[in-house]
Length: 169
Image 1 (cartoon, one colour):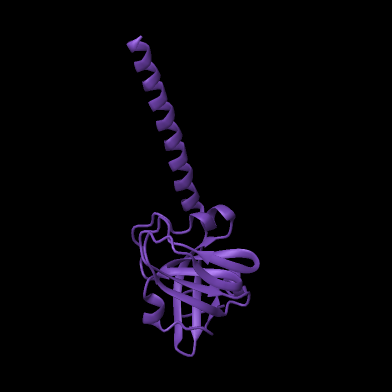
Image 2 (cartoon, one colour; image 1 turned 120 degrees about the horizontal axis):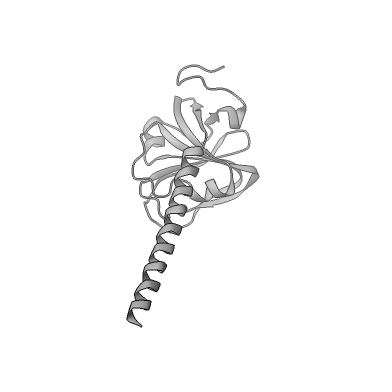
């Protein structure tokens, strides 16, 4: 009887291991398939450019930057909602501090939440009538001077192609 229990335990382990491997593979594949776009903030303070992953599906928005250990200061993520709405975020499973920049339909910066704490479950309200949210490294928006009233431009938001950090089409 003990031998039979051992085979069941091995079979269970193999089943769980294979299932977990498939799950991880799907998550890795999803992150590889995210689109990148250049996004530029502009205001009276100047301009700042970021390469952002586009999170435009319920699954990619839910995943966000969770489990990210490091992100260069010129990278980020753009969350895209099909229509303006009231949005809230949290930092569950997010290992790096983030600035969350909440944008209107036109790409206007309506609210900035600076230095959200890693792994914090506190709800961060972004406001109502928000269609886009940009997450960048914590403290970067203040360092660059990004302020409420600035505008974000890229293909998704303003249909404007940002060619590099100094030119636009």
